[in-house]
Amino acid sequence: MPPICSHDHLRLDVSSHAAEAGFARPPLAKRKAAATPSGRVVRAADKSHSETLFPGPLVLPDDSLTIDPTEPPQSLRSWIVEKHRNPITQRRKTIYVSPPPQVASELCLTLHKWIVPSVLPGPLKGGCDAPKGKQIVEYLAAFYHPLPVKLLPDKVSFVPWTEGKSKQPSKSSQPEYVGLQVGTGVTRITTRPCPDDVYPRQLNLTDILDAAIESLPSDAYALVMLTDHDLYEDDEDVFCCGRAYGGSRVAVASSARYHPLLDDGEEIDREHMWPFSHCEAYVQGAYQDAAAAETAGSASKKRKLAPPDAAATTGAGRQPMAEVIQAGLLAPPPTASLTGLWLARMARTVSHEVGHCFCLAHCPYYACVMQSSAGIHEDLRQPPYLCLVCLAKLTRGVSDIERGVNGVQLMIGRYTALARFCEKWKRVAMFAAYRCWLETRIGALKATLPVAE
Image 1 (tube, rainbow, N blue to C red):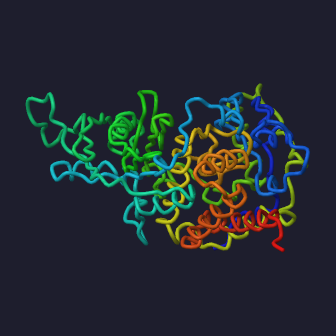
Image 2 (image 1 turned 180 degrees about the vertical axis):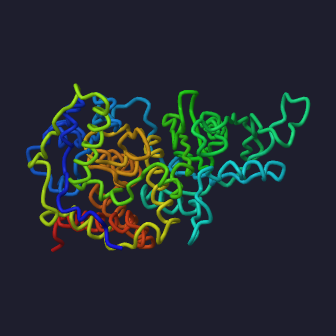
Image 3 (image 1 turned 90 degrees about the vertical axis):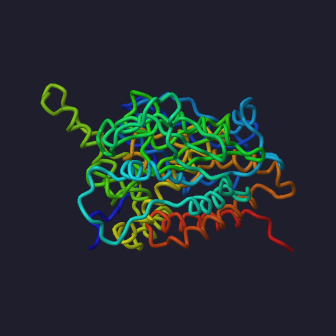
């Protein structure tokens, strides 16, 4: 079945809603300066700083930058002088991934029920497997190339938590606590009923991060804990997909809310996930939907929609992002590979959370994997790549242990590793589009290298 939307015009800068929300994107000169160690605009043209493939953040209604439009940006210079940043060293350069925990036999029946959505419409056709630890290791090894990425060697399991209990709970009751065993240590994990009933029960992510801190290997630059269970951080949360304590080198990410079979209930528009989220018709539609919802039942508050900004939109046939979108359109529909769709979503979030361990703050400069997110809808609209400013930070950090390799060569090596990963998952639209994006960037960067005589 062909797509309903042709994505004829693309939105390459913030939406018309941004100004109304109070968000002012840093101008081009400041964006260029933000990617330099000095924090000043370089007079000589930097050919590697091309914004062709780096649109602005969309800033749609209810997006994070709409809710908090004044969050301060972090430039490369700010990142360099950040006191709490952990430097990458030869001794501590490995990223560890803890796969979703195994479950002790006493808890097996109970905890496995907790990872089954309560809203599944029935038997699934074609299968849909949750992301595996080894797949995330492979993706992070490409994303953070050339740093080593490994599975955590310690066995990780959920076990009964019996400390302080005088008797075993009845079969009908749900445990208030479970133990998370990493190696020989066990940490108490608080559980609670899921507020929106999407899953039977959730785990407290702060407790999981405490377990990560206790089990951090001595040679680890960072450790990310994966879980298939739904998470929450505090009583005000409905759910949380991930969190990082960057200074402590630990992060956690959950695949639960990315389950493709939740999409219908969440009204996810699969046709406009990244890169298709830059479709101008979609951006305008999101603004119209928000305006209609705000004025429903209140005729006195009606307002006119802001017209499309010609400077921020372009015909899809006239710029490289159009080729990225076409590459995504050539992939089979999402229903052809729900496992791949699930992996794409989780890979993006895990790379974001680990990015915080590298002291990368939330990014307002561009559409970027390090953008903050206010919900699943915004999450799926955001790209998998690091923008020019965030990439400059990571490249600078890796350069500390890759002496003699210039920044452009490091970027090309990293992009090449990512393109190889995407090739393996080319039947998934995000990875197919990302591969096209990467190959275009590789070509542009190679053109900036001096010609060998």
